[in-house]
Image 1 (cartoon, rainbow, N blue to C red):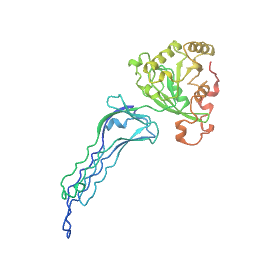
Image 2: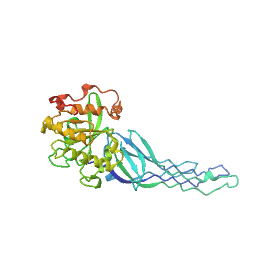
Image 3: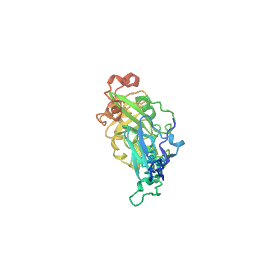
Image 4: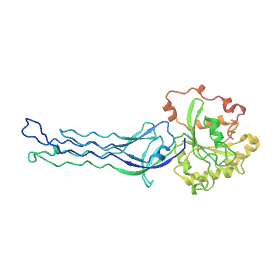
Length: 361
């Protein structure tokens, strides 16, 4: 499935049905009179957040959404049928923005959240409703109120508990493949990850969602590389894992680069808790890891977790640290219901965690 996190669509609620002009003409009734019914209400435009969707790709092929018009009023005081609501299903994490993208009109953060976004027009009055003691045979009626219409933007912000950031080739795809059942593309070149990836981590009886976004490079806030467009998907994360390549030219410079781009993006990312992980431990020895860890602490890291995403070494200690930032129950656990047993998670051997044990330096 293709990933799409922005889409522009046109919405129109249904117009109300017109009222009827009608008169009674039954046999044996000497004086008839008006009996035109009112028109039916137009359909509302309703957004509903549903589970199982993580892309807006459906809105690439259908950009116009128009609710039905209410039914016409009829004789014998019959009211027109109200139109059905137009229900638009969106992924959890979707925001509805104004056409200029300056205002958030709706924000869907929970499964089942339902918002009546645009009201349908009220049905027009039939001539029976105009009858008075002095106006016995009215012929006026209302055509029904028009529906509302507008262009809006849909923007998807994936809901994840933990975000994974770093330079290209820091090993983020390998890491998410190691701790989840995701199969992200891995390659020995930059930007193997072109769109965000989500995976479910199951660790010591806890379940949480991990988001991997494309790598950041210097100048991403100005559009360099893939830019900072996908940073919106980690705005709601509780903690960020900053993965740094131990085999890179300068791990401290790499950390400063990514931190600068997060700060330039804003939206609260610069204030989110960080867990710094020194990756690709299988390519270096403990002495080099100690030296680089000291450098990272000197530029702001509170603690450094040496790990190897390829072998799983040190990953358990890193995930233990992540659990400290999670609430008692994550949204994923609430959705699943009940407690997950520790036996449900992958064992140490399947993640390669039994090969070596590392503590934060």
